[in-house]
Image (cartoon, rainbow, N blue to C red; front, side, top):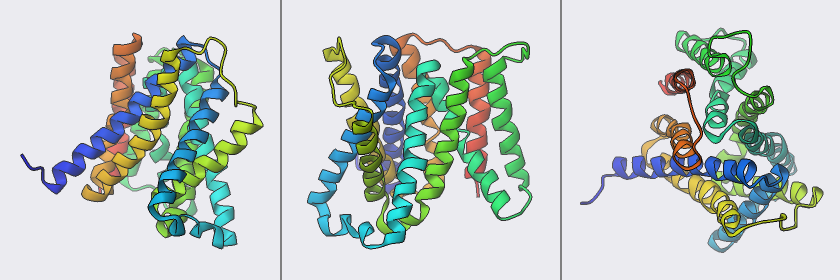
Length: 295
């Protein structure tokens, strides 16, 4: 049976979001089961993913790949995107996983779109629209539900994990905002590839992560390979191709499958548990993203 363009786009977008969800669970295994240093996981993922993507794009169109370095202002924008967008977004996400789990970290990171909306309200000096107020309220209530279970005398998730999760959401917002000019001018994949490689080189060699962790097993190798190949290269490629076919609005809504996938895989593969308040909190945060996606 031949798929229509919309069906193909939806399938590709779903696959990309699922790959991102799987990536979080693989990271959770490395960090919380194998107890591998979080900085090693973050730097190895970014460096090798960037290196592989740049290599693939070089053979596809090497002339177009280096265009960004012909403009000094865009070089500065790329450096800003690499460190204050991509590195913060990806690095703090894995730290949030370390202190919580893949599902919870991914859900908290999904408050990022609400932060983007708030940023533009402040920059444009305008009040939020009614649907934006609903989104802010839903997202905040979702985080409160997950963090407190409505018992305000204590936190039901690690305070450190909550901190890194919120910082990850800020990184996601920064990543999206700082990439706009570059992606419009040079394309999404070249921008992401250079961002990963530039920040990856600095953090990989700066932290001395060019070593094999003690007790590194075959399963650990498969996990880090999965994070690089499935959770980074395949996820971006599938998701962005899907969005190209069906549009950003539908793509962003389908992208909400990412935290759902992370929760499901975290439960099935690692036995992570989620209570009713966690599920409700996740639902409110995803509702906020869906409301913001509507035009």
